[in-house]
Length: 126
Image (cartoon, rainbow, N blue to C red; front, side, top):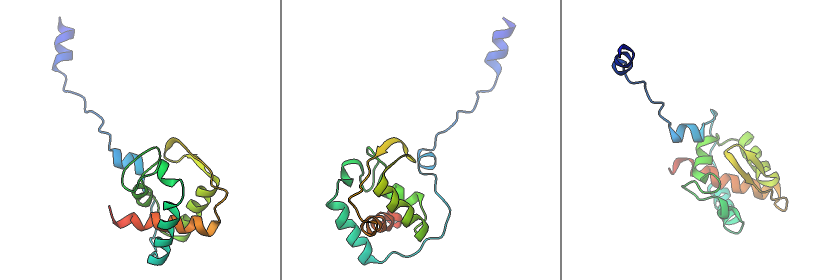
């Protein structure tokens, strides 16, 4: 009887609150460079003619992360433009959970980089 009273009188434990945005996006610190509008528009056109929209949407999670969430995670600078362009070409897994991104070896590095410029241009739109 005493044991049940002690258990009942204990203050409730704090529930761990899951912050979906913080835990999912995990922003990387870094300087943002400007993105030429012309490059972003060319990248948008390349994405629209590719298979990207099968797994990605601009502003909501689908099979893969939203383009806007990718833009939130990575700084808009040369290092990440190059990293993401290479990731588009070679594919990948694990950065955003378990989905597998198919490789796109037919894309040139320059075209993949233009696609990244478009994705990163969404950084300030959400």
